Each structure stands twice: as C-alpha cells, then as structure tokens.
Length: 366
Image (cartoon, rainbow, N blue to C red; front, side, top):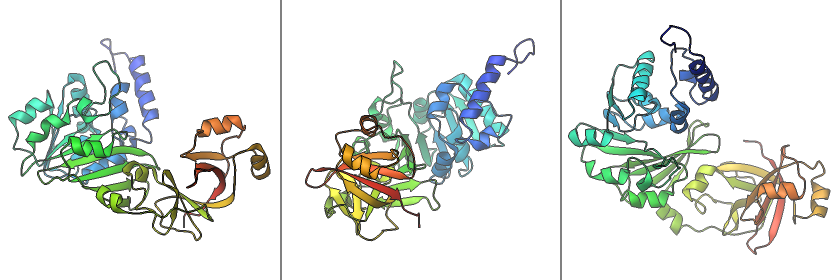
C-alpha cells in the first residue's frame, strides 16, 4: 500500500479500512489477519461469506478446478478439504491479490492461473474430481442478471465436460428459479439452499452423469447446528396435500429457505394452511418442530382503525403480509404504526378470500 516514494497511499489505506469494516462479520478469519489485502468493492459484492464457503468445502474432495476464482474465498475453503485446487481468474491483478492472500493464510496446495477458465478446462478435461463455477451475474453493460444462460460463463455450455469422474458444483444467485435451473442444466444430482439468519444467501447445484430432474433439495440454516432444516423433492411436494383451516391458537411463518424451495404443502405436518396461496399455517396446540417462526395468537380481526386502536395500544409492531393487497410499508404508513417491539402484526387472506389480521407474539424457541 505504498507508492513509489515509499510513502503510505492514503486512498488505498481508506479502502482497506472500509473493506475490513464491511466484512467484519462476513469474513472474520480474513479481516483478523492484518496482512490480508482486499480487492475493489466490485469483487467483494459477489464473494462468498466465510460460513457459506466452508459449507461448500464439505461437499467436495480430491482435485478441484475453480473456473471463476475471483477473490478466492471459496478456493481458500476448498483447499482445506481437497488435495489440490486450481484457481482460474481472467483479471491479472485479482489473480495476484488472491495468490498473495492465500500465501498469507498458509495454503500451499493452490495453483493460481490467470486465464480463461473454459479454455483451460477444454485443454485439461480429465484431471478433475470437481469443477466449481460461480458465474458473474453482471451483463455486458454492468446490469444484474439472474438466469444461468445470461451469466458469464454460461454454465449450460459446459455440461459436455461432465464425465464419469468429473462433477460440476454451481453457485447461483438466491433469486434464481430452482425448477427452471434444473431444466436448464438438464437435471442435477442435488440442490442446496444455503441460508443465514432466515435469509437465503446462495443456491448450489451439483451436476454429474447421474443427474435427474427431481433431485433432493436440502434447506440449510447455517446459524443453527445442525444446519439441515428440511429436505424433500419437488415431486413429493406436487403429490402432497395440505389441509386448509381457520386461524387458531398458534401461527407459523415458514423459513425463507422453505419458501424458496416451494415446499408449501409438505411442511404443514399437523398444522393447517390458512389459504391455498397464503403461506401461513396454524394449529391449536404448539408445534415445536415446525421449520420457521412460531407465534402465539393474541387477537385477530379486520384491518381497520377501530381494531388497531383496541388491540395495538402502543401503536408499535413488526408487520408481515402474506397474499395481501398492501405491503408492510403501506400498512405502516396508512395507520401510522411504528416499527419494532415484541409483537408482530400479520395481514393475510383466509381460505374464503377474506382480508384479516392477527396480532401475535413470538413463542419461546423450545
């Protein structure tokens, strides 16, 4: 971080301080090492967190090729479980920074190469147990893209590189439609939905010659131990049935990963769904194992001034909506409800398309 006159470069120092502040929770092992050098903001955006990178590292072994090396966080994790890792990156400066950081972190089983990952794979097709791809989700004009076919590289053009030995592990945007991705990839072996604190962070797809169009989908919450929250196949979901019923003593809001997977019927268990397109559930007795947030219902009624004045005496509540014409922000603004507090106001439509609200308090985790 010094210039030609051996003086400290203030702009670079400021960037390093800002990066450390921003990544304190995302990459604690890296931030706590004073010798680590962080690249530009653009490269930090798509980089994996420490927890998600270490999760992916549990899925691979042997010789791994990372076609989209980037900042090198996933490679750092892969090097801890694989015998050897080859890092490919087209940006010379980023390759140099990643190589330096990996040396600082004491990793000696990584081969750093600056070049085109597709060309390298074409020249060395049989050398890998796993090929890892985290395609760039920016278009030619810098716009964000989501579909696999629009990302760089286009993963669907690399499927012919799969053989009896080589499998491909693909990381995608959490916004990607899972069913469409499975079709684009002509089937996959398995899908992982990776979440942290009830927020979907990554989708992972494993592709091999044994892939199928109805793979097992696992939902993981990395804030929990063990992390596996739910697993099923979409074929099972299509065949499942869910009982519809009225709001009762307890209300349940599915985990974000469950909603992403689309397991709306299979998670119901002994609870009943409030409406076909309202992804809230209820039961008379508390269901401790429900994969999501659990609430005790304090009151229910219609969303109007009289009901709110009677039951929301403090004028404060968290707000959540499901299959409701108004957003939480619109409800908050219209009825001047302050944010926060121990109570949550759910606005939803029941199975008769009636618009209702429920005032709830969160249950004890146990």
